[in-house]
Picture 1 (cartoon, rainbow, N blue to C red):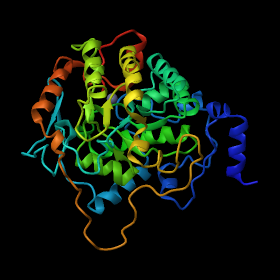
Picture 2 (cartoon, helix red, strand yellow):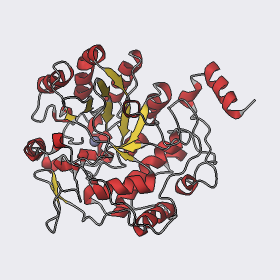
Picture 3 (cartoon, protein in one colour):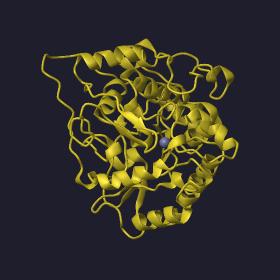
Picture 4 (cartoon, helix red, strand yellow):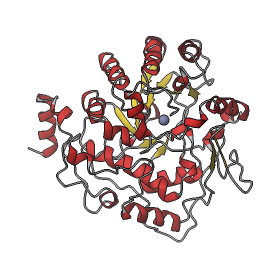
Length: 408
Ligand SMILES: [Zn+2]
């Protein structure tokens, strides 16, 4: 009996096993993925155990420990000219907007910052007409995530969860419910939720890499297919690092529910009004589906989703991001129920002396309204003083009943 058949029969007979025990995983030793994520083929501690926790950075903020293999992959990509020389941005803590020095235009094709609503053609942003790509950012968080996962499970609805690394570390039980019990799709939302364009190349590698690592280690070796930048703050430099070091697609959104501002300048009614406009009244991008920015951050954000969900199901086909855009859930796996298969990630070795292609940068006309961008970011100004709260503080804040978090 083959290994895959054995696994299939095992999970057929004992589906609950997938909750407690991630699938065995395997990467071929010749795969670059082996060099990037060396823990495969070794015996990993149980997800949530003290030994498992000890595998990951404990410091707050962007981890300063970066595996050499990741830095080598970054250097290889840089040497091939795949990472654009775009300056780090500077965050204005008052406005929550990132700006660039030396006259670099964030809306231009060279930088193309999504903080300014600029998407490139490879960004995942507009699902097909009639389709909602269902996403939730910032989890897992005990409480709101539990409510959301129960609701999704009871409605047989899969979703994409863009998870924060330190939140997985702090809420392994909820992680295993989302992945193992609900068998939902897991994406990367960085390790500590920074504005990625403000970071150095090494720091971007650290933020993405550690999140890929903990998801990889806790899912039987699955390597995420995509990331969503915190605050939507990405540009062509960050996109290139994500793609050429870790093979990650960039996912943004075409509607922002602003659900994270409930209680901080926005009411639940306003958010539900926006959702109703898009979902019920067709107020989204004409001819496109909906990819709405929603969160599993607080009870109120989850309630806003649960309120609109019946209308979603009535009028739309509701899918995970990879299902909506027709790519595999993981770089080395077709779903959260099938074992990982070997693959190659990281920038491949040069095969010719041809000049690498420059990133394709096409600004979507629907997202070039800087007025809208400014208005959207303006709402962050009210909470700008707390915008640097790191995700490692989030669980504590939520546990204390504090809602002055500005993550999105
Ligand atoms: Zn976020």
